[in-house]
Length: 128
Image (cartoon, rainbow, N blue to C red; front, side, top):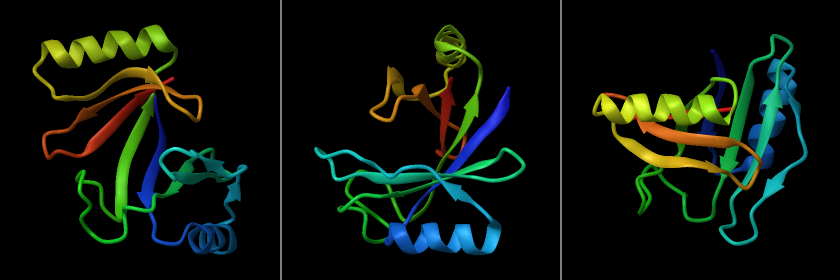
């Protein structure tokens, strides 16, 4: 298992992309855009293999939005292997009483993931 990526919400996606490319040598993938929700994102890869997801959505413009999302850290993601591994670990969390915030599913940008909440309510993605 390894930490897959850290994600942050930003008020200006292109400005954030430029910052992480210029100052930290990140290499951005092609911009993802969900037409239905207005969600846009880039994954920036770094020489060590670490990745940063920068995200923007029209309704997240301050430190608090209607669905609890806010500017800044959005989630961390652990890559656990394949879809069966995601399902198995999700069920282990459920059996232990950990809050499942999102059931296993394939996301619009191609990840198979579930989301659990850590003891402080932080979102932790379990991904392939």
